[in-house]
Image (cartoon, rainbow, N blue to C red; front, side):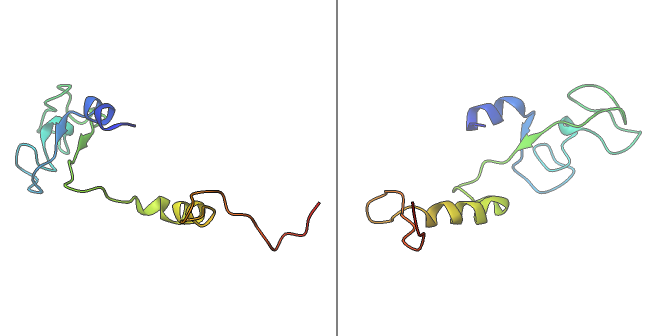
Length: 93
């Protein structure tokens, strides 16, 4: 998803790690965790399915789940010319 799509689908931006603050990890717009609270997005209590928030980072961050795949792809590309590398060990056709 693009940055704009992510921001469109979220209900708040997270700016504080304090659970009890607005724009924090426990912001009631993202849902509730007790029977005594009401979700500020949908108005439900414990039936609230939860809603997404987003965090704007100062610099890009690599997703740890994709690092191995990205490394494999990069090993297939020549860093000098950008062309696909050829497997010289393959006995061929």
